[in-house]
Length: 224
Image (cartoon, rainbow, N blue to C red; front, side):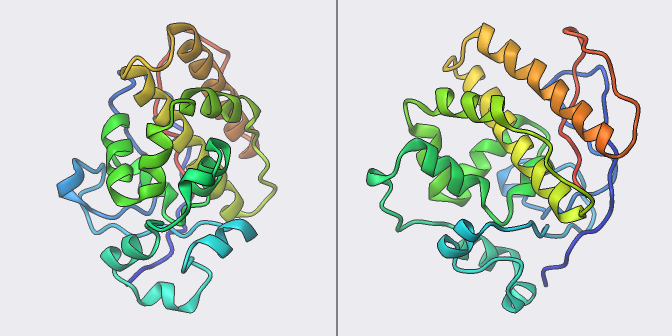
């Protein structure tokens, strides 16, 4: 049974390699050993995310539907794998939008390595594989990441939505960088943006912001 995870998590900033991802508490992850190590080996839950009108029209079922709570994880994966979209007639921006509306996007923070998370998502949904294979994916992701802002007000669902999308885009950029599809200069910009996003996240919760340090390294923004 799919349950909604409501735990509020605090931002973590630690001096560890970017590939080592650590969460404070749980973030609504489902255990999936076939795809790699997840961070919490206890009983894990599927997260529910705020959905846009666009995603409701594309995804067969979302967490706002009563049937969502009755599905198991494999059913949720199957129903959110958009295999039949006409991707050939979609721009990369449109494919990215579909990916960002994925009902299980918060799962991106459950893996212990950025590329492992991205590859798991590519196997879970065709939309992610299409996005990754697009030649202009690095350009489109960087443009979207530059423009991404903390827009949450006081709703846990909005904060969760922000975290999931931010985490996904950075994981994609990191993986593209490892594949040498993103330049050193572009990735340094992405890292700087990530620290700004983290400070926006901290400020939302009334926490002290952290001055930009180009040598500092940290992990995913944890979601409620």
